[in-house]
Image (cartoon, rainbow, N blue to C red):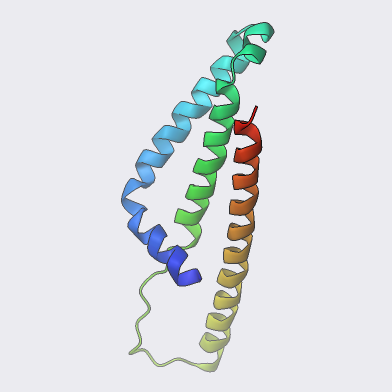
Length: 118
């Protein structure tokens, strides 16, 4: 499970800057809508909700890109007892983060379905 997420995160590393640019544009657009548009126009137009939904998806992708990139581990180095304990703790933390990531993905999918039905 972790290896699949790590492979996807590794392949998407080239698009990290593009992800940040899109997030900045969406935040700017959402801020403009909240500050400068009248309240009646905000409720008639659903693009603010779509911007918020896109921001949630971009945050989820950013989390995946930042957490699940595994650095190359050199197998030729002698592993001491404390390094083995550290590696086990890192594996446990990565497993826990992958489960949290999958739960967040499911919740964002449900939120997307509910928001797009409006």
